[in-house]
Amino acid sequence: MATTVTWLGHSTFEIVSGSHRILIDPFFTGNPSATTTAAEVQPDFIVVTHGHGDHVGDTVEIARRTGALVIANFEICEWLGRQGVENLHAQHIGGAFQHPFGVLKLTIAHHGSMLPDGSNGGNPCGVLLKLPEGTLYHAADTGLFLDMQLIGEEGIDTAILPIGDNFTMGPEDALRALRLIQPKRVIPAHYNTWPLIAQDATAWAERVRAETSTEPVVLQPGESTSLG
Ligand code: NI
Ligand code: MN
Image 1: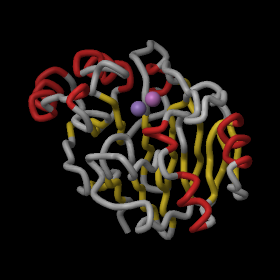
Image 2 (image 1 turned 135 degrees about the vertical axis):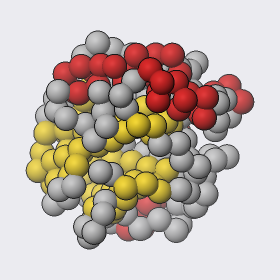
Image 3 (image 1 turned 90 degrees about the vertical axis):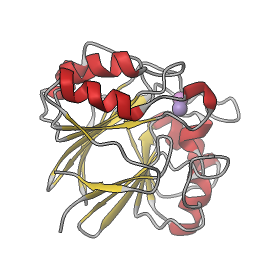
């Protein structure tokens, strides 16, 4: 069965691999681009990349309702524990762990990570998922960094890159990121949620096709693609 990658709007993605459902940065409540709700999703695993409200999102509510294992950096896991989330797995930058669905490694990201109540969210992360059918890199919120080249050396089938600008890389730096990572395919994210991060993803995809060897996959919120 193919591994599916579904964009649920903003930076929220659901990965279905075999019998496993992995939800990354589950932001539904207050997300104008969300096509589903926190009450409807049914993940086995939740990954939180950093502490900002548009990434922690509905994690507490979904984790409490479903009992899904939440994977995040140590500081965010400590905070989630204080919110009554019990099923937690803390990792940190550079550390990989074999989960039931595959190997998850946290990577660096250049950004902030303060939690919604002002608590310290540790350092922000990206996430590398080595699944049976391929490797996915969700860069999450970050500026461009040269070490993306090291992440690319892991052999990336699908990269998810922010293109919204202002808070993260914009379209231009996301093109430079592709030259460092050299993924087979790229899905743009973290744009068009609000006017401040409005971008023309179709125009960006044309440049990806013309200027890199990566295949762009532009999704609408709610749409899916396969990982490989
Ligand atoms: Ni952020
Ligand atoms: Mn964000």
